[in-house]
Image (cartoon, rainbow, N blue to C red; front, side, top):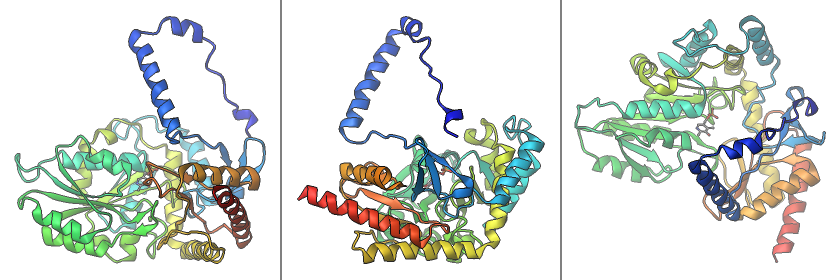
Length: 429
Ligand SMILES: *Cc1c(COP(=O)(O)O)cnc(C)c1O
């Protein structure tokens, strides 16, 4: 597998290219070098861990040296990426329609599969309409920036946005550069949110942007309370359910479905890349709102549509997951089993009301070290989460057990973590 994909080298023409470099390019490259050194000095340099997913062996991946690695931090939460129905749908679509969409949605890039997937997602959330994007990131960026550039209350009334302080970078990207007045409320703090809503100009259009499951903290927003406040102050609600779709609610419609408030959320945004195991993002909401975003958002209009192979795989996955309650039950049973094991072993687990199991480390270098040793000595992988993803001092490892992580795998993990953490404490002492 690795050999046939081995990287080509791109340096053959390097000498002549250097001759032709502009002064600006030379200065920019020097700037990059200094900036990278700085990132390294801060311990923030990101290095990829090359791992090859093995559809039939998930959660085992293979590493470059041919070793099997047990992965604990995949966002393929329900192990749907390797589901036979999903793979088959993707292969069948490739044979029938080819590899790429061949155009934007407006330029012959709309297949019946795209339309069927949008209808399926609208139905999943009980909304009249849904719109696909090439990723969850793009859906947040494109939808929010388009909404906030509008003037529904007249030319002089800017949008007032209330954004949870822990919101994902993709939502922040959607707020930046818009004329909206953005206020950040303390994470899940309803008192703070209400104070900000109260102080906002009365006639201005308001929007509350938040997530359901926050994947770094493993906590869940009080959706009903946010809806109550939104109602009281006439604010629109924009909910990122990326870490919940597929997993929460009786048909995988997310925490908004679980809590019975989906009808009170104006726009639900989700991904097909996590619980559904494929790729792509979407929004669901009112017909004319979705149609307006479809008609004006550059992030929708000017990019080739999702390949039909991916749309077909995602459609198969969503259809399957909606009816597979056993898979959801198993996910939560497995998450609880891992939490219990961490607690029994005295590992410093961070409290979690979700399927995500974070472990406190509290130091960037140590966090990377534990992750490295887990991989090199024990053949297991968990992502180290460091600043700026979490504040300094709150560095952690993040575990996402799936329905196919067994008791034996968990025992192996806990034994390894206890051994590594003990040694690192001894070193620190
Ligand atoms: C991963 C993530 C996204 C982006 O979704 P992709 O489909 O991976 O682009 C958006 N919001 C949150 C909260 C996420 O964690």
